[in-house]
Image: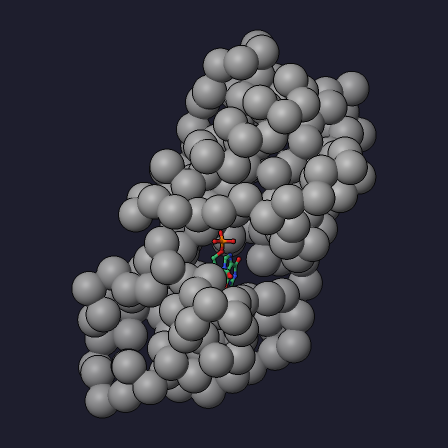
Amino acid sequence: MQKLIFATNNQHKVTEIRSMLGDGFDIVTMQEAGIDTDIAEPYNTLEENARTKSETIYKMTGTDCFGEDTGLEVYALKGEPGVKSARYAGDGRNFAANIDKLLHNLEGKADRSARFRTVISLIINGKEQQFEGICTGKIIEEHRGTDGFGYDPVFVPDGDTRTFAEMSLHEKNVFSHRGKAMKKLISFLSDK
Ligand code: IMP
């Protein structure tokens, strides 16, 4: 079984990723590994932030691990909130406040197209590899659904009419940025 520490404190992301992986993987959270720290995301790119998460955990534990960073890129807002998605409305990382700010900034804009982009940084035996996943879609004007997290209640992926918050975990995984990046990671590990 492949043991990997997942460098996140976001339980939603852990649940999503565990639901994608079969019995061949043992995904250990930071909490389960006894690591009580919040890794900063100081950079302006998802790639660097993902790498700083995996490198921090690898240096602390010497165990194979991965980190990821995700941004919501809205075309009419020139790619905002992007790498700052978690703190769009301030340091509180408040999902509802972030959505309110997003909907406010999109008022009156005809183009509501957007995409989620995830970058995963995997470290195996000290060597780093990155995987990207993109999900295109649009931001709707009202909140719909109660599942998921973050911007899920206002994001409808291309190819469906429901928001991510109206889908089951498995349905979201089929479309999602994180699901696509994880598929690349799984295929990389199974080719090794
Ligand atoms: P980070 O990767 O933890 O920095 O996440 C950035 C922010 O993007 C999160 O706080 C969420 O608001 C949002 N986010 C990340 N992934 C998703 C997703 O799958 N659905 C909705 N929002 C997400």
